[in-house]
Image 1: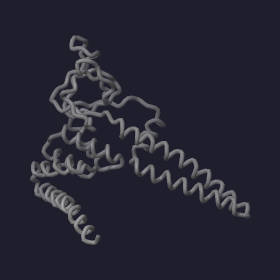
Image 2: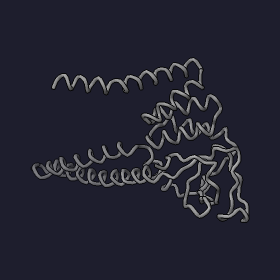
Image 3: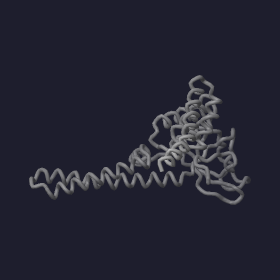
Image 4: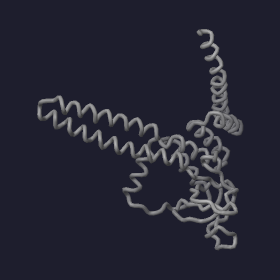
Length: 252
C-alpha cells in the first residue's frame, strides 16, 4: 500500500513539476523582456491549467507586445475566474485607454452601480465563505440569546443574530448572482481591426457603429445566418457577424 501511494504521488508530481517549471520559465522570459516567449509559455499553461493569475500574466505579456485585443481577452478571462483581481481590473482599464472605441457607460441610479460593484468585488467562493461565516454568527448569537440571563447580553446577542441573518441572506444572494454570472458569461472581444454592426440581422439593414479591435460586447441572442445581437458598453444593441469576435468563455 505504501509503495502504491509513493508511486501515485510521483505520478501526480510529474505534471505539477512540469507546470511549475513552465511557469518559472514564463516569468523568467517576462523579466528579461522576451515577451513572445512569455506569451508562448503562459498560453500553454492556461490551456492545461487555467487560472486567474496565469491569465493576468498572459495579459501583461500581450500588453507589452501592444497586442491590446489579446490583452483585453486575457484580463477578461482572469476576471471571469476571479472578479476580485484588482490588478487585472486596473490593467484592463489602462488597456482600454489605448483602444479605438471609447463608450460612455449607460446612466444608472447610484445604488444600482454601487450594488453591482460590491457584488463584483469578490468571487463566488469568497461570497460563499462569507455566507457560512454569517450563518455561524447568527447561530452562535442565537444560542447566546437563549442562554444569557442579563438583559444587556440578550440585546447584544439579538442584534448580532439579526445582523448574521441579514448578512447570510445578502452574501447568499451575491454568491448566487456571481454563480449565474460565471455560468452565463456571454461576453466577447472584437479581435478584428473593424467589425460592422447593423440594426437588424441582415446586411441590407441600416448600419450601426463600426466596432474596432479590443471592444468588449455581450452577446444577447443569435439568429439565422450566424448573426448575433450584441450589447455595447454604452447600452446600445446591434447585430454583427461573430466570426471576428472571441468569447471570454469559449463554448464547450
